[in-house]
Image (cartoon, rainbow, N blue to C red; front, side, top):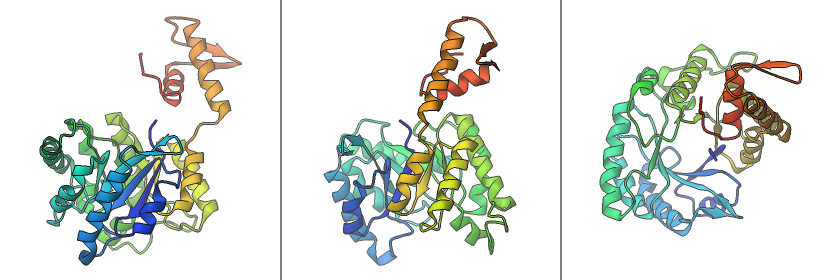
Length: 296
C-alpha cells in the first residue's frame, strides 16, 4: 500500500520518537534537519539509530509502518554524517530536503549503494523521497525529474514553508485560502512529474495543526487532485489524512464493477454500466484505486 500519512518526528526528542510508532502514521520520518538545532545533530543521530533499530520490523498493531529519515541537505556538509549514523539500522528510505534536481538524487543514490554494501543491506532497497521545491532553483528543476533514471525514487513531494522564505513571499494563500500562483504552480508540477514517473505524489503539510476542519478539506481536495498521500507535522493530523486518502467501500465497489464490466466484454473500448458510458480512462482509474497493474 502506498503510504498515506508521512509524519515528521524530531530526531532529538526521545519522547516523541517513542510515541511515533503508535500514531497510526503509514510512514514515520525521523527528522535530522529543520527540527534539530546544529548543536543537537549528533545526539539526534544517535537517537535516530536507536529508534530505527528498535523498530526494524516496522510493525505497530499488526500494521507495517515505514521508517524514514530526513537528512540534512546535500550542500550543508552534514548529510554524510547523518547517513553514517543511521544506515546501520537499515531505514526504509531517506527523505532528501532542498533537492536541486535529479542529479543530486543520483548522487545520494550512489552514496546509499556504498553504505548498503558496507552494512549488508540488499542493494537498492533504501528508497529516496526528495523534497523538490524548497528553493527557487530546486523548483525550476521539477520538470526534469520526468526524464531521469531514478530507480530508488519512492515518490515526489514538495514544501511551501522553505520556498516562501527563499523567495521572500509574505503569503502563500489568497484571501479565499487557496494557494497563490507560485505555490499552485509548484504543487501542480510536482503532481505531474510524479505521475509521469509513475511514482506517488505526496502533498505538502497543512501548517496549522490545530485546524482540523481545514486539514480535512485540504486532504480531501489533495486526494481528489491526484495525490497519494500527505505530509504531517503533528500526530493529531494522522487520522484525518489516513481517512481522506482511504477509498470508501462505495468507491471500491464501483471500481470492481467497472473492471468486471470490461472483463465481461473483452476487447471493448467502451462499455455501459448503470447508465454510464465508460472508456479506458475509467478502467485505468478503477485499477489504480484497487492497486491493480495497468495491463492496457
